[in-house]
Image 1 (cartoon, rainbow, N blue to C red):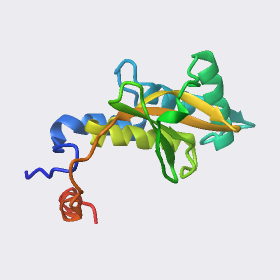
Image 2: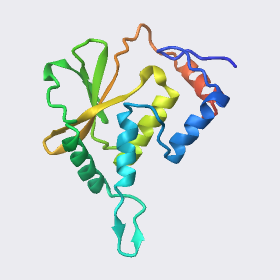
Image 3: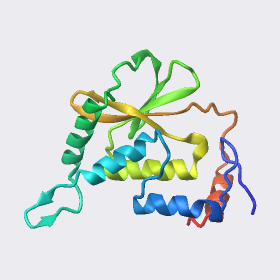
Image 4: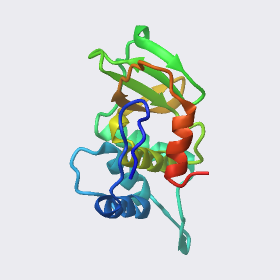
Length: 179
């Protein structure tokens, strides 16, 4: 198997070793990994389903999920209120990025604007962490600014030393079955 270098290192995928872990993510099974707040919150959202008359709803609305997350953040003291606005690095359509005080991590604030649910957002984070462990997201808490809830994630700060060759990216994606 040829490995393709993309920015932060090489990605290798051992199907036998990772099949079980990926199946757990896809089926919503929570691993025994301690301290994984992303999985804890995902489980909280799935267990927060409420019965509606004679049948159970398939999922909470995004507003109901937000109430569950706010209550969870209150109960577990997960509010992040001390992000230094002077450490602001960049902003895209999806998130705002701040340099952490340690200089080797960034905070990313995401309000799930591109997701139909918070559960989908946390699911995508689990998949990202599975496929890209070199740029692992860690959920550190939540922030609320101007009545908008955001997840506060920490991720390694990666300084680029060269421009990404899009042909390498294309080959990497093709190699992994993407069209």
